[in-house]
Image 1 (cartoon, one colour):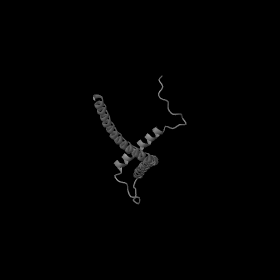
Image 2 (cartoon, helix red, strand yellow):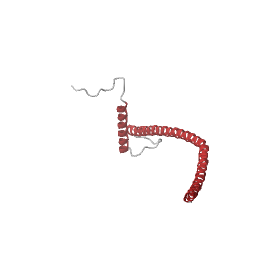
Image 3 (cartoon, one colour):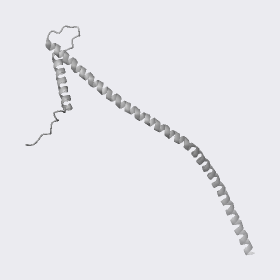
Image 4 (cartoon, one colour):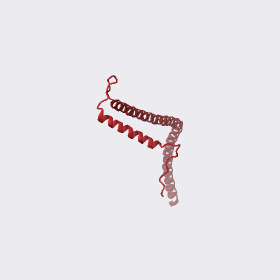
Length: 150
């Protein structure tokens, strides 16, 4: 015979099954309460039957379970946002470290700018000297050519 998936050991409890059972019970009690008890009576009013007492009690119990679930959800969201805060704090420290490193590079950047300006001036001087040398070459060639033709 084919075996079905093994049930949890006798010592273990199936939390999912229990949670689903509680959910089903709570929902059914709330639906019954909504259908049969239109509103929750004030605490000082007299309840006429034990059925009404049970329904109000079930409604209040279901509401308490909902509030408990909402509280757990709020705790989980608060924990998640706390984790985001930790990440943001880590990023802040990282950005501060990058800013410190960037300030260390400012001195080198100013030196590079100074060197760039000096190179530009040097290139202008070299260009002027190149033109002067070209002019001198032409004069020497024309003087040599004039001397050789005489």
